[in-house]
Length: 255
Image (tube, rainbow, N blue to C red; front, side, top):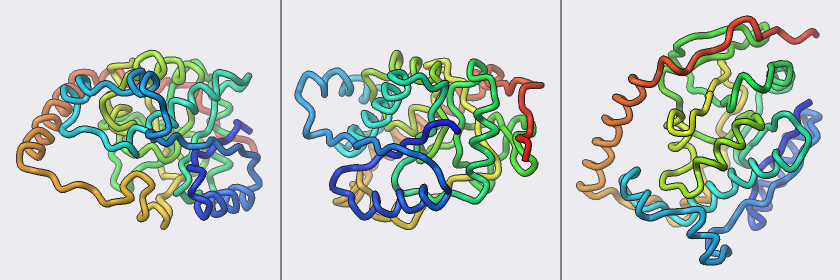
């Protein structure tokens, strides 16, 4: 089984207990990766990870400290993988629920050649309309997205994907889940699993990022967001032909 880590703030004890109970219920070995608190980083580290000028070009508002810490935590997951001998890693946030098929899907992903993909999303929306599909297990498909969905709450990460993220996303200017949607900037080969095997848990309503609530969007920010969404649609359509599911490499797991 591929190694599993979950990202969790030291102060979020209830989430930790709930997540470990879930993983133990599924019989999964796992490690906890302490999440990064942005304010605890020194000025040099902050400048290395987050670029306000890049943020102004790429996003419609400055990132909150919680978003910055979240992004750095996911980059630390990349470092965690590269410091190991594992070919790939399962990364989970601490506010998810796993379906009964989670283990079968992870076993099937482990059987894939790790040099054919960079990141496989384990969470997908119910109304997903994939561009292409191939069998992954008897009940699940490996898909190429028409539009890569947001959410970074659960995914498989290959060593090649970790290297690309560390090379192209330091510094960053968008939230981590938004940045993955711009896969062409880092030449990320992003695939997904349908139906989903990671669901949003009840604890997600009490976000670790927005403890004080999301800020209101002013009209300039709304206009900027709409323009960025339009630009994304154009660029995604232009590059979409580069996201191809490799054929003939996916085999259902033997059970």
